[in-house]
Image 1 (cartoon, rainbow, N blue to C red):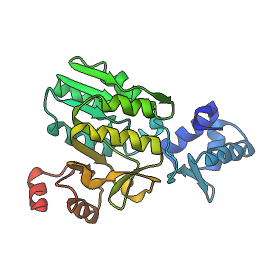
Image 2: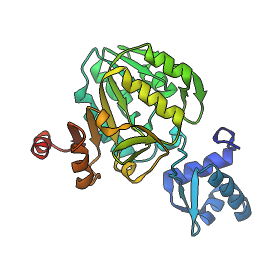
Image 3: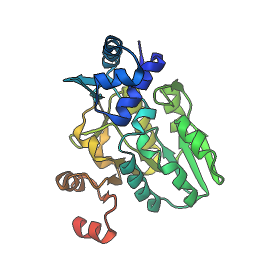
Length: 267
């Protein structure tokens, strides 16, 4: 069984836990109107897929080094922090520029904000980007196709990388699953390769991270964090982490922080 073969009830369980977790097993049984035996059987399957974690009768979203939740579920996590991060991106983009966006859920609040910057050209491997940004007048969208992965709602693989390497962008915008030893990391090698290709063809690069990414680990290193021109973090990121980032990256922005405060800290 893989994440593309989840039953409707399995998906509902993951949705409940993602939106409201941690949730007790008994509460899940009540919400679903099924027996505890059924819920435990479902949870066992979801734990095998590393989508959920069960401990002391409570169920929470899984955060392993080798798996990632589907993008539709990740989009609901840290939503206010992601919106704050995206607001900081807007002043860094110029009208008329070409942007390449990855399929990260962190950037989803950015899509409607791009109306402020038209005309733009947007390049992406994400179906969500094409469907949402493609509706905005004044934005030309290019799709980087390849093998479609339903759980990411995006394309990956050699064909995608080849398509990316045939274009050029002014700015690469991305996030990632984890920061390990001052490097961006992802659970999947094919996703890591897509992100590296995007960085290779862009003149400037911006990385947006909420504070939870610094507590996670993932199997495959993408690039050292020093590869980015700008890193944007949320206000819940510890001062120690921010100071560490500033040792490796020229421009580190804490979302919501006044520009004068940034200048003082970076001096």
